[in-house]
Length: 582
Image: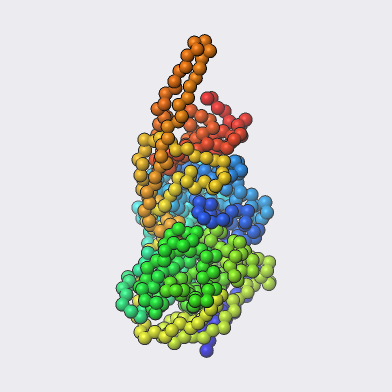
């Protein structure tokens, strides 16, 4: 008996012939989380040809200007080459690769954006700073990662217009990250389409780990919600990748300017009843257990090991076109090679512009998964399916193979089948009853989220010569940061930022030959007050040191040996290139 999965593959194979000459985009995100976490990913692990663009997430907005968010963007362990430099160096090993700085995300609070958008003067300041930033750091374009409220929409579109006109002569790209559905936030889509090169639609997190039931975060088509026990959840109208992309196209965004966003992380829940494994069954998020320090989320390369365990039972959801598995009472769903291939085939048959992958550090970049033949299996699968890699014969993607049967589960519009994936597979147990319902989820960044933000000193990699000394500051000692959520790890959680304990400089003595007397220098430490909540500032007492302000808390940082702080370019520079009046 043919399954819906195999029927889809047959239909897609028939429809793909026209797409052989098409060119698709496959941007990838490099994020601050790549180096401010337990991840071992670094830019040098990137392999040429994986992506058409690399988006660097994120830079921040301070006083209507774009600034680096983390000192390591500018200076890393070698003292000079920060991550901006290292990412842009990849263009030498992959000619034609474009790099884009993503501005906003979880680094810039909503009130900061609202001020920047509010006047012609502020928008002009931002546009000028954008040009300077791109030229200084060798980026090829900008992405605005901010979801405006309805009353801001005119000002938001005005900013995008200004950026495009400002960039016209240089040919720099203007892109925007947009929520799942345009009508939720009142987007002027047709006008926006005139001034952006493309948009990245947040087609992920249709359900979040905070939900009290299991479901599919990235379903290609809307699945049924089937339950075998008592559970309640809100009704749904739209909850799939297809729903989202078609809504943007219908609203006036040309399909070739639309990118589907896909993610390299999965989600997991602890089942309330191990026998209830259908979407909608009650559950709570699994505890953090890996690189992503957030309940309910884990990377692909952490999931792949669980898939192979003897006590894991793997499944495939046809309509959603995603795998899921059950392991020791835990329920996980994620993207694998087959599910990504189907999403790429969808892009080709529907005529969309491409897919954007979040993020490089979440794929199996070291090739450690049991079934990985090469590093980056997810990106390789996506690129092959889009016809971007030479391995794809005649630019035609290789369709995933699948040999499975339908189960006894009753569904009106979908079937659950054996998984076309790695590991032990079995048919899902027959359920006694099926309740059809839909769920409503809101876009990830339609409202500013409270996210975890650590000061630069706390996240400097071990061995870096950029050292930090706590500063005595008049700022609040505990600050709550409210920012926009980023896709991989930023659920709306609240954290407090603790400043380092202030220290008093050691007492020093100065001896004068003429008087043979010793003068005690004052022991009261210099008190530095942050001029703005976020930014980098010179130390008025030393050219070797500078201050990084994060949420009105000042952190005292020292430049590597042989360098001094260069305030005009906001980085440590060769000493002979810096004017120091001290």
